[in-house]
Length: 378
Image 1 (cartoon, rainbow, N blue to C red):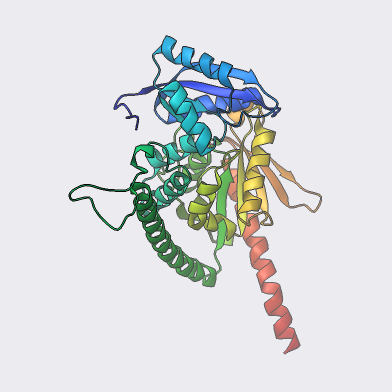
Image 2 (cartoon, helix red, strand yellow):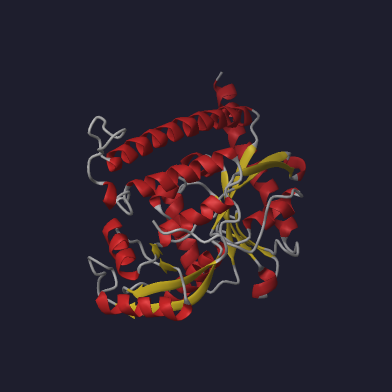
């Protein structure tokens, strides 16, 4: 196995053109992910292929180019902006004689760095173990033989089989603990529903400014930083929105394009808070040239977790960078569909607070209609 240096690592990034859109934005995102994980970007190797090479993903010639970049910059890590199969990863590490990770492993590593709460750490560990289970052969091929020798004679189980069994037991235990925490969250949510408090979740692409907006709305001190996945743990606060009373606002994990399925599955309990919200505030970095693609990526994840049908208000953040004025957009029915603001400067934040008050009043009016009809029938 290759050891990870205690100090910052030097990375060579690899991104191939496989006929994907927004290549420059994808590469910029990979660089930010790499820095967020604590490594420095020493070189970028690109290329174009019709399809990935089955053995090395990049082909022999490109693998030698990566090796030359490693030697020239004395780098110790190669990061692919793609998903590698276990075999491809193993073959690349053998050819390059250094650690090779793909986009999924990089995101998992950042999640491990960011997790703060007990539940967040459990969810990250589950995602990492389930990712590891598909590529456990890496670094263990020398242990494929049966155990033998004095003190090692046993039931005939190979080391690899033992590791798989222990890993499976740990995954099962983690799922049980997370299921218990999820049950506790459901109980709290039922209590909130009985009090008829509107539940609002902030969603959006990572680094869109959700936590900064959450702090501006709630006057709390949730961790916010200009980095990817600064927030992993759901934080909820009750805020007063005028005559409509209170609403519960929740800050959640940010989304990203090609979000690993292992993460979606592991963070099911956290993401369920979004799926059960009454209203979503979809926060968008209005200053980003890639905002339309980011909106599509968030919508895709919302569909995947069962939150695609929940009403939402688009919140176009960072108008201090885009130059747009603070404003409110309404749809053809007169309902608020978008708010332009800056969470950093506070411009337009009162407009969003008013929008939440209006949404809470509309929800209260709709919930009172069935009760009124029932009373009239009786």
